[in-house]
Image (cartoon, rainbow, N blue to C red; front, side, top):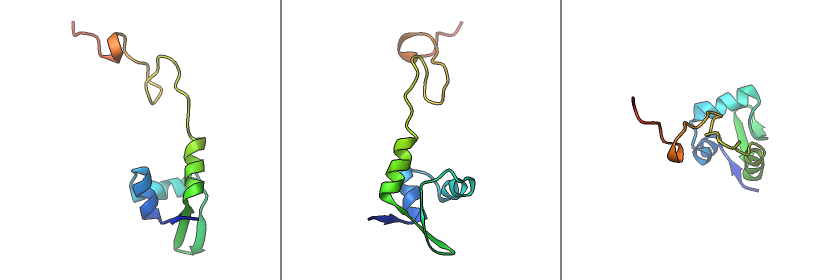
Length: 81
């Protein structure tokens, strides 16, 4: 078992510590272990399972975030008129 601190989790996810605390507050976070009132740790396996559960299959013709890709070659913007 590899335990990660909030700081290590933030680095692992490429997020800020503040974002990790927002995840915790909303309940949308990996399972964690509360060692003391102010010390929590995340098992890397739980973090990876949480990430795996968040994967989505992109819909054809949609860019990340659900936005429609603009028409044209390779999703480039159409020429200005």
